[in-house]
Amino acid sequence: MNLALYLLTVVIWGTTWIALKLQLGVVAIPVSIVYRFALAALILFAILLVSRRLQPMNRRGHLICLAQGLCLFCVNFMCFLTASQWVPTGLIAVVFSTASLWNALNARLFFGQPIARNVLGGGLLGLAGLGLLFWPELKSHPASAQTLLGLGLALFGTLCFSAGNLLSSLQQKAGLRPLTTNAWGMLYGATMLGLYCLLRDIPFAMDWSTRYVGALMYLVIPGSVIGFTAYLTLVGRMGPERAAYCTVLFPLVALNISAVMEGYVWTSPALLGLVLVMSGNVMVFRKPRPPVLLKSAHMNG
Image (cartoon, rainbow, N blue to C red; front, side):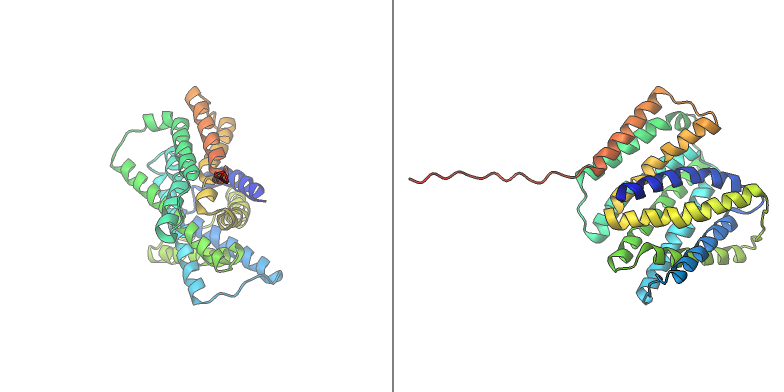
């Protein structure tokens, strides 16, 4: 079950970048995010009400959902999409891929969970592999004030994503399932971002073209309803640090699609990077061996 959820998350989030790219144009970025998560919340609530699976929540649960909505369905997307104006998407992918390491560190800091050596080593190995994969793009991009701002936004977005992971883990430990918390979190996130748009006088325009509507529906159903539910279920089942290794793998899906659609060329460093990423993946999911107990032989005199 864990493997199926993991592969589903990697495939879906490895392809959503196409839909995000297709949305650029008539509709402002924050408005597109509002549309995405408002529709996703509506679908989730409809599913939960029809199936009678909507769980009741107390005040604490709603406050955590509010914080989760701010982190996962509002601020982090604004950070990444704004950063993409000044920083190559490959570089943003490298920054975002540090989520597995941030999750491990934050779980240690806030929950007191020990950091497994295989998780830390696998995350570092995967990050080194991504560095090789995107090295030509990183090397050719000149450093500037806007580049540094973009990197700062990408890092802050990753930290928000990590915080949202830990909040979801907290909710699941309290017995709340991701379907319910995602529905409320997406509703809160879309509402807060919608208020931001109203305060900034950002028009709620709509592009009724097949291109935009198709991209929006892909982001709403596979990208949000299915993708976030599968991922946050993994967070509850495997822990935030192991689940977040998806963020290292899904850029590989995007690269392979880019090779077909945009002419990306695989190089020797990129292939070496692929090997490192896959090796890191194996290391993260390797179960630690139980300690060997040595029995002392005692001889009776």
